[in-house]
Length: 178
Image (cartoon, rainbow, N blue to C red; front, side, top):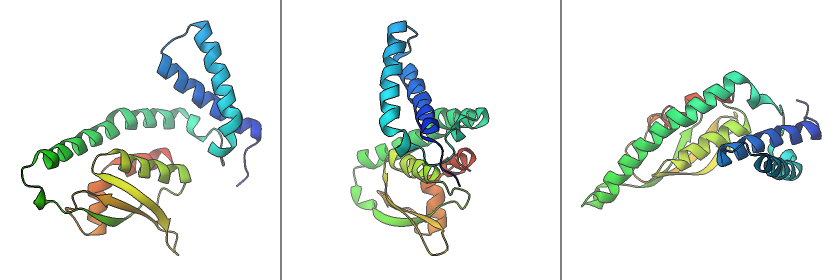
């Protein structure tokens, strides 16, 4: 696969940074827009080639953007709430001895092969309370595995544990990063 040009990397990163700036400031004031463009341009100049390895405008497909926004606002938020409630039960429980923490090797989806997709799954696992992704590795057959520290190991079967830990998150991320 051909690497994108430096300008394509810069432009893609600039657009993403500028959208993030607009989201943070919620302002269309000309001074804010100019400052945002300058900051976004500088960030894109330094980081564009590090962020974009191939398909510079892949994420800017309207369908992918809608799925990404839906995932972040609905699916991930719901998984985060569920994990916070589970952690609150653990923390507020008078008897902490009933919980067993451990590291489990969870298989990844064969549909997600991009670095961005695997990183997003890994980050979403880590952002939900009670789990931390320690490593992402591939075996000889190029199957992906996530090594996850889980504060309450309720399932030792890898497939079932993967469903508990990743829930619907990986399926939705697979729709974004095919």
